[in-house]
Length: 150
Image 1 (spheres, rainbow, N blue to C red):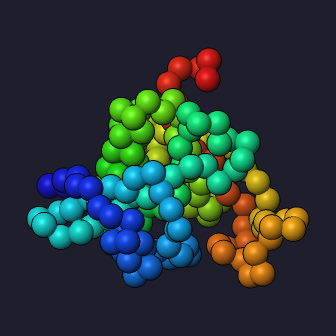
Image 2: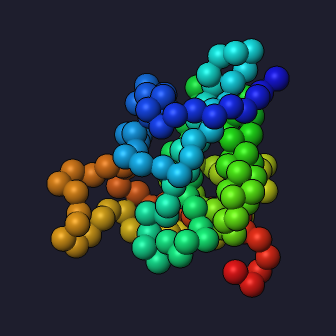
């Protein structure tokens, strides 16, 4: 049986560093959630401000990292928990991004909706990192929100 517990950013980032396929740990967050099975850490969700300045309106959060060890249903369990926590804190919308080669089945199982292709393959402009921080491919944005008026 999967259970939720709080987790520090330091411990969540350590799990991401060990298990994530293509992302490194993050520098900050609003909150992190751990998923355990029989007392064993099975996954983490790190939730923070949206990376896109256009979405950073004070009412929206982003799941910046979601990482599991492959435990069945852990991804959808964490996505659903991240939304419930954000909503309980007064946020009205939550977003995340997946690579275009990923299926999104865990997000759909948690009730999230695909908002379509988002962004480009790489960062551009003066703030562009010297090396890519993630695979250079298209992403899909998924989101969940309160009502259509938002």
